[in-house]
Length: 132
Image (cartoon, rainbow, N blue to C red; front, side):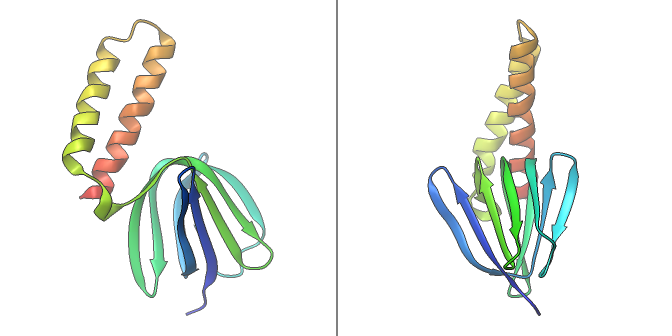
């Protein structure tokens, strides 16, 4: 199957660099699927699951926003705020984060605190989903 060069980076450095056959991820306006020879494209990423096909196998990850770009040279880059492979997610820790976020939502003092707590809950829920 045809591939493209995929590079995933986070503030901590290079996360993955190599060939991929397909990337499905959550953009801010919905899911997007990138295949080889995709037209040049740039979008902001939302909080959500990423599914990457490498050597015919799908790897799942949790992504906490960032940027996706497709260059003319069949190069795809994901610049993510955070990115975790499913097998690296600590399910118990994610569950504790969910409980803390729900508690923060119940006790939010203003709209700003509420929005921050909702974002934390969204991240925790994605990590829980991907870790299963």
